[in-house]
Image (cartoon, rainbow, N blue to C red; front, top):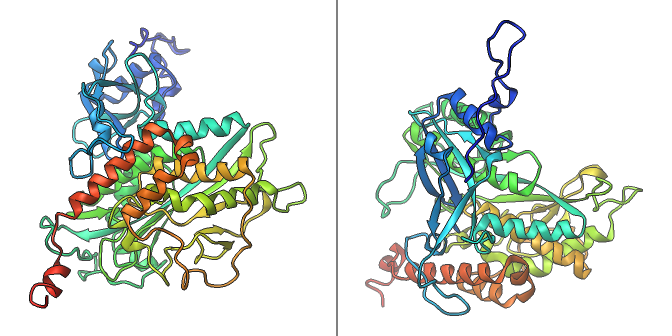
Length: 478
């Protein structure tokens, strides 16, 4: 880290009083280290959280006093942090993965454009998202933020810039410290437990007015912009839509939104969960991703021709997704629970079809004017790491563009009732992922080997648990 330069005191036109620079009022981010100290001082910030997403999207990092942050301090994390399973274990060596014997440190490099306050902390606290580099300055290939940057660099070489807009669904549930008991819907302001079937219900949203107010206030304090918020079909299930923009910025926002929503819910003595299928009999939670591609020279959407019709690149992008998304499913559905969401005759697709405004397809093309033409990937679940889900989705589309993969004809009817085109289990998804050499090369072979090893280890941990179904049907019958 570099220390900031001394403060520049600008004379005011009124006497000798210093004028407050405009940048100190930024809700999110500063340009350089020179601006950091003034931004922190103006807010009276005492502590800094230096955080980065691990493979699961969990915030890892270090906290320190703000004065130490602005001094010449070097920050590091063990490389093992990014090889850890969701339960805290470590994978076995094999299939291209080798655990580093020295468990050497990786350097945290703060991205100052992400500097923001942490509004739920009692003491004045700020947070900054960090990238990871090796001690010699090389980018670390297997960390999630760097994986997404690698895919974006491949687009940049072709003079292209992706634009994305995620939609994140989640459930509010009653506090439940005992994992042996099923999750249940929370009690709203009416005093009654929330029921299902409240899709787009304003009354359903109003049941949690105070909590939602906190979500908005926390988000506004961090410079996070919510486009819309709705009540979904599930009991206590909400959805937040974010405005379209740069993939790194949007992945950062989803990463921060998840923390924000959980903290707001805890303030009201309930849980917010991004599990793909938290409650039996209720709909699953998705993270739909809207994608379009911009020509950097012209600033125009390459999915639309001058006359407003679809371009070859549009169909090739879809073709790439149809061919490679099934192989990338482990990045969209990363846990055993994720596959409980992917069921037939549901709004969560189990196919690799596409269609115009067809919600039963994996890849939906919403109705829009030509400039806003986009492809919605409806497969990812909300438990996915946003950096990895965006990286995988954009990578599949890019392979389609570069290889000129032809899309199948669009589906005009229900697409989710008959065929199952996707893996039905985590291990099957890992096998397909490892077998797609082109996809793994684009994402980074080091990442692919690490991620696959983690997922295999998580499956083995899951298999150690005896479920209620087994006790119910096998205990006295077999």
